[in-house]
Image 1 (cartoon, protein in one colour):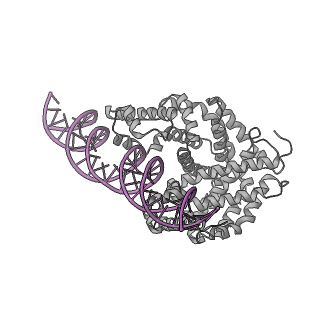
Image 2: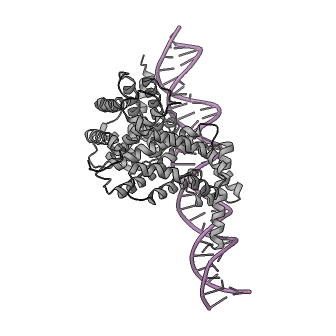
Image 3: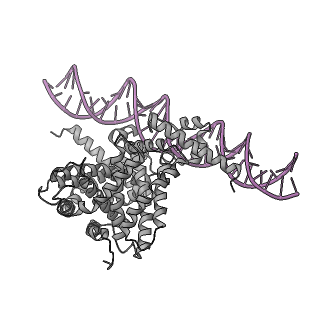
Length: 209
Length: 209
DNA sequence: TTGTCAATTGTCAGAGGCTGTCATTACTCT
DNA sequence: AGAGTAATGACAGCCTCTGACAATTGACAA
């Protein structure tokens, strides 16, 4: 099924991603031109734009893949789990597999550095947030399906997902600003933040954590 | 205090905003060129970019103002309120004043239509989300100050704000997709969604709303 | 009022992102 | 091997955005 043509395309795409990310990480996103990326892989600029509809897309490609990965893991869960627990446990279970999936395209190291670039580059951060919002909507539909409620009538699926992903994003952001950017610390920070979701909403913040 | 020079600038800026928003609303954001906007106000394209650093900025100017407005209202609140209550009540109290403040720049009608354009225009939505994130960070600092905790150590301010603003955004999004886009319905939708924050997070969704 | 200074603007040139078109090259399939 | 299709390269061109410099206009003091 995988003809030479398709393998070649795959390789070009991956090469573009890795070359682009390396340039972004070393000299910054905005001061890297598409011409440079194309030249690094020895294709024309026009070809670059046939693989990625814009410069943002190549920067966010791996991130988007990770989010799809998480979404699909949620869908594969037993339907009788309480919604919040489902989101939380998926996060925990899926972590290692994500690392493996990423490595098939780009070195994990490079990806983690790229995550930090995304956080500090306004147009990338903006695009990333928008992509996350699309994924949120898919999660809403899935949670609604699992619980048998209609998301257009009952606000709870949207509210739950909004709150949960909001906290996840915050954790990711905090993690990205540390100097030890490893998968392990990312996991810990995220777990800690999610655990605070309940306490943060209660009226009384009396005793600190 | 307000010399002729300054008044003139203000007028040019407002004219650019209104002209831009009218064009965006009628013919779409992406198919409106900066040249068209500049021409509508009879200034050069270069002058447009002296008032707004990019095309997005003129589209989001009023939105950003509204968010600043909310933030400042939060800061003006008594410090002994529980954090969640503070965010919730501010929302309720500030609503009418926002309408008045907007009218000083652009017709309220136009602004509400512009809100819908933002939601359905990818680059605008992206930039809007990013701006909201910056405001979130300011809210985090304010909540941390009021409650006397350190946001770099205690995750609760970030978690609370992330959850709260996440839900607010969701409400805004849902509202924007209705056909009766009035301030009043926006208020109602938002209030309803915020009220569901507690119930959505509990394990048992047993009885529907 | 008038002259000087500073802020605002217009004009021009140019880089960079992105798209349409068309000829050329590279695979696929019979 | 040869027809058919997909991928690519090479232009040309639009639009966003920036730098530089000259022209204009308001502010303010003499």
